[in-house]
Image 1 (cartoon, one colour):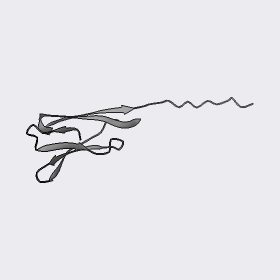
Image 2 (cartoon, helix red, strand yellow):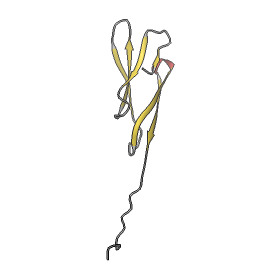
Image 3 (cartoon, rainbow, N blue to C red):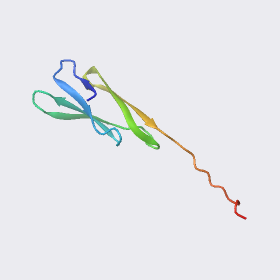
Image 4 (cartoon, rainbow, N blue to C red):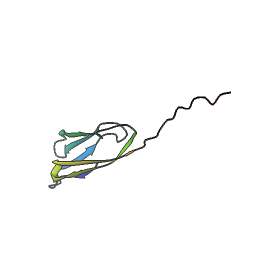
Length: 82
């Protein structure tokens, strides 16, 4: 769970943070009704490790995803063998 609605009648939940896209859903507690609000992912998913946090504001009208990524470089070297 990543947050509550202003009236406390809904909870905001996210999908598995290790898989893209990270989906944010509004769960209405009284009825069990679910509504997908957004699917969040970095513009460039290269090196994506996990979605760290999802921030919900203004009753779900504004969302943000904080995530970790790790980029490395691979070098090809030729001419080292005798």
